[in-house]
Structure formats: C-alpha cells, structure tokens
Image (cartoon, rainbow over all chains, first blue to last red; front, top):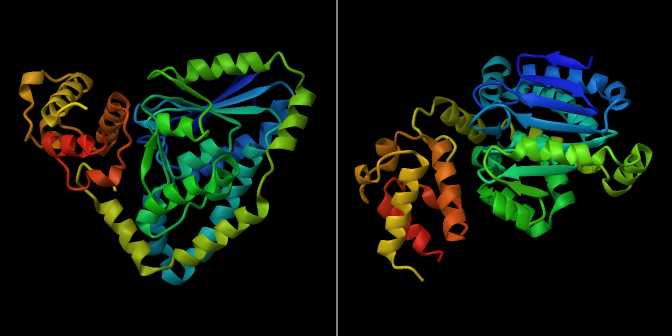
Length: 267
Length: 80
C-alpha cells in the first residue's frame, strides 16, 4: 500500500521517501481512529521499507504537529467504563499505542519528524520515536500530563531519557512547562532548526541525502545506537494505569474538556 | 540592559507585527487575549517569538494570570 488516504493521516511513498501527513482537526489529537490508521501503517511498514530509505512524519495543520492524546476520548472512558474499569481499558489501549510507537522507533529506515507549533504530550512522544527531529522556529515541546495528575504514557519518558540528560527530563516532567526550539536544540533534542514553514522542505532535503548511503549499513548503525527501552516502556504503562483512576485525574480531564476560555493550552 | 519601557515597547511592536494588527491599536494595559482575539495556542506562538527576540526562556507557567502587555513585559524584563 504505497499510498493511503485516511481520516486522520495519509501516506505516500515516492522516490524512496515515505511521507506521512497528520491531518486530524483540530490538532492531530491521537485517539482511536488515529491509532487504527497508525496500525495500518505499521502493518505495511516492513514491505514499504524494501523500497524506501526514509520516513518523514509531519502535520498539515496550521496549529502544530500534534497536541497529544485525545483527552476528550480519555474523559469519555470514565463515563463509559467507570472509575473501576477505566484503567483496564486504558492498559489495553496503551499496549496497542506502544506497539505502534515501538515499531516506528525500530523502523528499518531513517525516520524524521518535521515539527512546527504545538508538539505536546503524545505528539512529542511520536516525534521522539523518530531518529531525527527537524523543528521550525515556532515549535514548542511539552509534557503537560502532570497538569492532569498523570505522566506521559505513549513511551515519552524512556525515550526522552534516551536522548537527553536526566536533569532535563526532570525539569520537563515535573514542571509540565513547554519550551521552544532554541532550548530543544541546546539540549540536543532537535537536529535542525528552520524558519517558519520550512520544516518539511528541510526534512525532504535530509531524506534525499540519506539515499546516498548503503541501507544495510544504515540499519545496522541504527540498531546499534538506538536501543529501545522495553522494560521502562512497560513500567511507564503500569505507572500511568495506577494513576488514572485517581479522582484528581477525572477532575482535571473534566476541567480541560469543559474549558471555554481561550487558554486551555496554557498551564 | 534595556529599560522596562523599551522592553514593553518592543513587545507591543512584536505582537502587532506577528498578529498583523496596527501598532497604535495596542496599549500596555490591554488584555491581549481580547484585543488581539487570540487563543492559548497563539499566545504560545507569541511567547516563542518573544523568547527568540529577547534571548530568554520564560516558563509558560509564569504566564498564569498574565493578560496584559505591561505585566508580560515585567516577566521578560526579570529574565534579561
């Protein structure tokens, strides 16, 4: 399946580069539909990789790359399953999410996230599965989960720990603050910083460069330098599922979902 | 180090340019959410622009309760 047009994302393989566009309004929130379409992609990734040397993930939406998990869906689970059952349902869901994220993380081709604007929560975690992050000057990164009494659950903590120092991880996780591309580059998270709107172009130029290298060598190098922290990823799911049934979490989600002010993305 | 007044002036000028609003329509004590008609995502864009311009890092939790340019300028000034 070289081309796919879905409700939340699409992809296209051309000239050895797979471009995956995220386009779920309003801000690519990752819910069940996105998960299903990512699973479709992962199911064909090995086959696509025989003809591709690079994958670029980007967003076509003005507001940013991805605002994270679909919090309205998460809040809906409390209504649907009740406090006692919500963690069980969340665990099943997260295991599917992790399977997708792990597959992207280990993809047998070089992966590039071209990000702009809001790159929060699950969106940040999706970017962290990629080998390289190209960010435009208005990108902002954040793990806001603590504001809801939760921790990141799509694999963000182990992946961030893999890439940056522990002090940075503590700062981001414990303050829940967002930070800009300049800071992201300073801490070694972002590979390239480009002008507004130039992320995809820069990612394409990088992907074209990658075509010059031997694919078996690139894959071997990637496997060597990019271990996947499977034990910690499983532990992250456990901690999230312990926290989820807390009354403060449901209250925080309710507040977010019912927020009618202009400021839901500010702490 | 620039004075607080200069910082305030630069912030208003940057906000006007970023949101394509005439500079003269903005005042230091305006509620910028209402005057500019922006939401939190656009406020984060403005924050990024200001951080890049002034070469500072301003944690976004410092924006809690901040809705006017004068208070925002004081927050930036404290980081210069």
